[in-house]
Amino acid sequence: MNGFPTQNGAGASVRPAGSAPSTRSSLEPSRGTPAEGSSPGTEEASQAFRPRRLPPPSGERWHGTPHRVRIAGCGKYLPARILTNQDLATFVDTTDEWIRARTGIHERRIASPEETTSSLSINAARGALATAGLTPLDLDLIIVCTFTGDYGGMPNVASVVQHALGANRAGAFDINAACSGFVYGLGVAHGLVASGLHRTILLVGAETLSRYIDWHDRTTCVLFGDGAGAVIITGEATAEATAEATAETTAGANAEDPPMPGGLMSLVLGADGAGANALLVPAGGTRLPPSYESIDARQHFIKMDGKDVYRFAVSTVPDACAEAIAKAGLTVDDIDLFVLHQANVRIIRAVVEALGGSFERAFVNVDRYGNTSAASVPIALCEAVELGRLKPGDRVLVAGFGGGLTWGAAVIEWSPFQGVTDPA
Ligand code: ACO
Image (cartoon, rainbow, N blue to C red):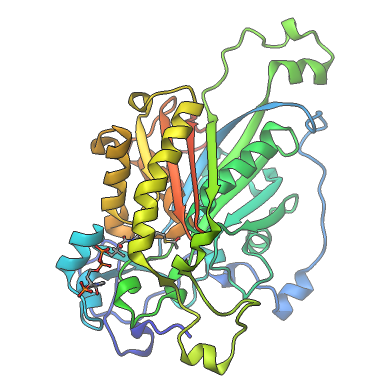
């Protein structure tokens, strides 16, 4: 179904990151391809299947007591293959000038045929675990935010990731809120840790959008790219919880300790299903199951009314962001960095300026990666850390918007990481 022309040799070539443009047609499978973890449905997988539950890492009481939440690590993975605007212009009626001017995108990454949403996720997850100084056995839960799973419905991506990482204590599920998915996931993960129901969660945003792109449709194929970003969300007991767990008095249990910076300061989630048709994959679900007709009509690819989605983004997202900033008890001047969904640099600029903020405080990497949907916010967070633009104690506004229509905004106080800073 994937009509990306390089796969049948009919179109543009793509080049690995950091290399000069070349005509190289096939690339080495990257780290983390499905071969690394056996894939469900294979004989290897069924032989390896052995339900295992390990006890919690320590005997201390955790469930049901309130906890401070922080982001303890982050990682990202972008496929090596680069597809430039010039490459696109060789097989679709577009130009580098049009794409740059209307979107700010210069190039995007395209997964190799061996790569899947789970393999992208696994690579990002390993980076996040390393920066947090944790192992897969520290994870209680894995959440993958995506609408481009490895399989047509089930199993979920998170279970494939859980098995490949050897995260044998972790539950696993996916969230589908399209480009807002990661912000929704932040809310779910924060709530589970803050309530004491879970201790350490791997939250991934990952998409292999290239498999859902109609390479004959210039209004969508220039916009999207593949990638994954991941964060570790963990908690530490509040003074009250520590006192309760150790049977000490509250006064004797770190009541004087200043809290470590970190965690969600506010969260705003929204949806308007009336606009669902503005951005959708029409076929492949229960409404229009796969058929010869649906394939012939190219109904398994992303369809978008770009103008409608643009109008929705620039009208709804500033209000959601303003609400998140107010709920956090802050003003726009208190925000150190804006990490908005990387769909279009014009939307990022319009949202930040509508808030009264300065575009210089917006993080932008849509030029290099395009729109990676649920992956765009965690990739940008991770890159901002790597570039020194996001430091412990900073207040960062994150926002996602897209299919559903859905949107989400949150203010995070950034935390120090305990593990290595460079997983490489
Ligand atoms: N190359 C050249 N011309 C093009 C291309 C292209 N790739 N695509 C469209 N055009 C043409 C159109 O046909 C149109 O021509 P016409 O005037 O002769 O009819 C002209 O360019 C203008 O098209 P518009 O749609 O008006 O262009 P616009 O400035 O609105 O930009 C874009 C289009 C980039 C898609 C913009 O509307 C946008 O960014 N929308 C939001 C997309 C988004 O944010 N999605 C996020 C959610 S994604 C998710 O959830 C998975």
